[in-house]
View (cartoon, helix red, strand yellow):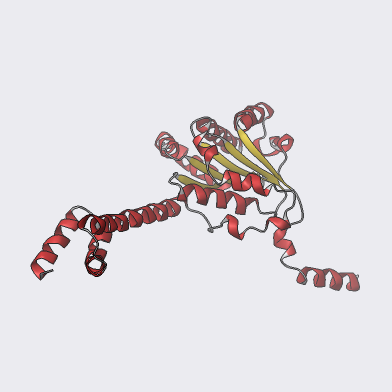
Length: 260
């Protein structure tokens, strides 16, 4: 292909916003010529490259916008270490049908058993399937809501939240909320009811949620909304994080036993 034609073609591809096609069309043209491909087959190949790259870019944007603290996947989760967790149920949730049905996922269990890992991995799968996702700790979400309220931009923030198909609220129950924080979180969860999905991780059984929300009626109303259409996963067992410290942990136990 002449230099003039190449420059013109690259200009057109730039105007059409097809950067991947611009990168590959020459190499693919040579490959098409070597393999006696038809014009249609060559064009299809170039367009497939563009579509594939756009899909990859979209997924990566979604993952960045989700603001995961650390990327976790189900492939890297040790299900054998948490026998109480229904692996098939978790893998089924990874198909994201619960999001399409506006359902919630609640992971309940003691610290260190992998609740955040599972929540992140499910949300990561949602990103890969094209859903708009946001990850928060419960404390981080409340701080953002309180700041927005103080700056008179709560309505604007709520419109932003409404665009998310899935919101993760991690570590609910680790720190008691202020009255204002509890009310704002209640309003947030209520606004997502049957309009989007939530994944919540908590170390508290449901009867103890009043310890952080500080109001029995509000807690009851919140649980009614959250569990109306929810997949509840109870994860019990020894801390995976602590077990990974073995035999170091056992060494410390033995040391302090001898000292005593």
